[in-house]
Image (cartoon, rainbow, N blue to C red):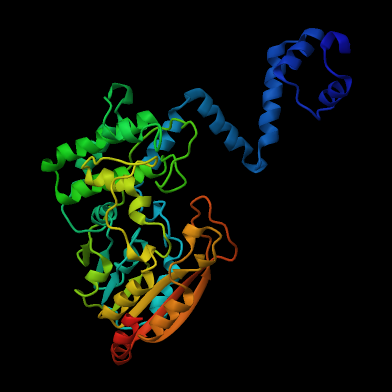
Length: 435
């Protein structure tokens, strides 16, 4: 029997005892040997697989009915699921971004509520993803949002700035983009530079085509609509990028094709928002507020270099690109990523006209990666803030956003809250800035 079937006796015993399911080839040999309809055996085998895979037997009847319908109607169920998902707008917190406070916002805002009072004007002076600003808008009379990056400025306007926009009009535009066939699209600036590197080549062709079309449509769009479309493009391509979450490098492996299907962002209209794209230290001398939230870059990683691709995409000036990572010429480099960071921080906090300073800080200065080492130490931050007023420190364990090489244990996010004493601050101003 073993010779005729070509099946090991031990394996055959397991199959006969129901301890092992035969392969299709083995099943066909068995059906032939026993002169039994192999179709019936396959049906029994498949039903056993389904029954053994059910994790919730009490839902078996309903599960099998849905499975039956899926088999009958094929991909219609998948399409229905995708259509449902793509009707849901993308939230502002969903972007991958170094130092994002999306998972810490609730902790930060709760501490601000508890430790401060009489806050009418809230300033987020290094806004980043604006997850903190987005919460502050719901609470305070006026919120000032600032970041030096062009892409971030567009994102704030798309998500948060008050303005006229027609949702149906934008959905029609996006629907047309989702019907594009990359094979029918010519090469463009984006695909020629970034295709096969940061994005799969056909995806890059679509991105470049859509970006140019948004620019062509600009005369027919309101400022809000223009920024919503640009932001929608950024947020939808973010998770398709062939990177570990930034554009300082791309993964040097073949890129698996993935569909680009745009989904509208969750655009809102707030009339209590002012949006700036300024050097934070310069803006500090122009504004008054009750509270300033400060979350600057602390290590040598320049954000304008990490997110250069989005800067190029938003500005769409098609600059000459350099190096393996295809970056444009440097622009808007931050002092906070250099050895001058401590003096820049002193200048900032001592020139802000505010009642409270709230500073986010993480302990990456103990990192094994040189580029992740903080340019300002914890003790220096604490010393400077204590010169401005009574300072409290709070901490929260937080899993950091890993860019690929940074490894260390016991990562924590710290929050300093300083109630500003103008006399103490002004007395310290000259001596601190001279150090």
